[in-house]
Each structure stands twice: as C-alpha cells, then as structure tokens.
Image (tube, rainbow, N blue to C red; front, side, top):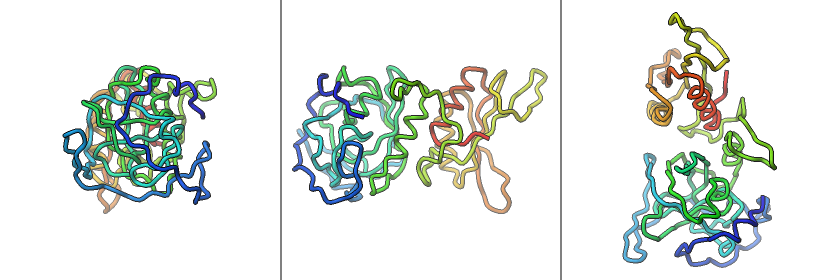
Amino acid sequence: MAIAACSSGPEPATSKIASPSVREETSTKSSSGLPKGGGIYKVGKPYTVNGRLYVPQEDVNYDETGVASWYGTAFHGKLTANGETFDMNALTAGHPTLPMPVYVYVTNVSNGRTILVRINDRGPYVTDRIIDLSARSAHELGFSQQGLARVRVRYAGKAPLSGDDSAERKYLLAQSWHQDNGTRVASLSGIDQLIDGLGWSVASYRKRLIEPDGTVQRSGLIGRQTLLEVGPFSSRSEAERMCHDLQEFGPAKVEDYNNGPQSSFQVRAGPYRDEKAQRAAEWMAGAGADSQ
C-alpha cells in the first residue's frame, strides 16, 4: 500500500539525521521492494539530545500517553537505528528508549483506533512527543493530515529479527474500522495467534450467556449479559496483562484454571451487555484470541 497522500500532508520535523541508503543484500522484500529485517536486537546506552537525557531499557510494563508524530519520504529506504531499512509503507515506528525490535500497541485517543507496530528506530526528540510513526501507521490511525496526534503506547512483546510483518498486518485486518481496498472488514474469527509467546495474545476465549434468571449457558451468541472467559495462560503475568486491558470494557479478574498438575490461569471478564460484549469480543479477536 503506497501512502502517496501522506507525503503531501504536514509531515512534522522529527529531529532525525538521515542514515545512508540501505544496501541490497537480502532476498526478503517488503511490498515497497525494500529489504525486511536484517537488523540487530538493540537496547543501547543512555544518550542526550537537545539537552535531554534518554535511558534505553527493557520495560515490559511500558504504558504511556503523549504526542505522536510521523515520518516518511525523507527517510524512506534509509537505515534505522538497529540496522533495518525504514519503509514508510510498513507498520513501524521510532521510540526514544524501548528496545529494538519490539512490538507496541498504539491507540489514537481521539478516535479509538489501535494498531500494532514494530519499533525499529529511535526518535522523536521534540517536547512531549513519545513515538514517531511511519507514514502508513499515521494513515491507519487517521492523523496523517494533521501531523500530530495524542496517543497511548503499550508494550506488546519482542519482534522477530527477520522483519516478518504478518502479526502487524493481521492485527490491522481484525479491526472493525479498517478499510481494505474500500471494503470494511468487520472481524476475523479463528485468527492465528499473532505473536508467539506474547502476553496480549491467548489461545482461546469462551462466551457464556447469562439468562435473566441468573443461570449461565454456554453460547456462541452475544446478547443479554455475557461473560467472556479468556485463556488458559501459562503465567499469571500474561493473564494479568490481558485482564488489565479488558478492564477498559468492564470488570475483569484473573482466576486459576484447572488444567491438571500444571499451573495455569484464565481471565473472566464481564458480565457485559450487548454492545460492550461485542466490542470486547472483537478486541480479543484482534489480540489473537480464537473464538470457540
């Protein structure tokens, strides 16, 4: 997907220095014809830009809200901070301190859109900006013409060095607001687990319908009041991370999951009514859950 429209918008200054053009040394190419992956895993040492100290570090609990900018044509085809190739048409971003490459969820707080992007670069270095998105990412979040947007950024997990972007693309296709060649994609059932070992993704979820008399029935339908059971998770921390996100839609809690001698956990979310149940179920499908 070429983002020609983005290049005519108010692309903000990013305080970056363009790297040399990439060498054509790999056979794995993006839709833009640029090499995928090829970089290194990098955290980096503390550094100072414009008088401000930045301390790169692992932070699996990273969850910050601030301003996003975007960059495109001036850096297209140049090397990123970890040695990959910047592709303005890929779902990528630069971040001042997170390791590279990792995945983060980015939500435009003004319209609720969320995408999964790959951090493979450094920046931005302007006032309260916390992330510098590719032109494609800004386009999908709906702010490429404005140049800046207020966003929430959440750590999602390590990304493969190969540059495989199937996780980002599948997550995008699962979003109800996404337009694919002019066709609205409402949801994906049975979506593959997006990122191997990623806490936000789970093996399955079950929907239970609560009848007016208080009885609970197993059901594949959304309606009345609905409980969503998510899991099993192999670790409590993964379950707690999913629980934290589901609390956006209503009550959620972590419970022990009876799975023989091995300890595992599940998240019970709800009960929800109608629209909230549907939104929560669609969100989980986008996060990699498989409806059963």
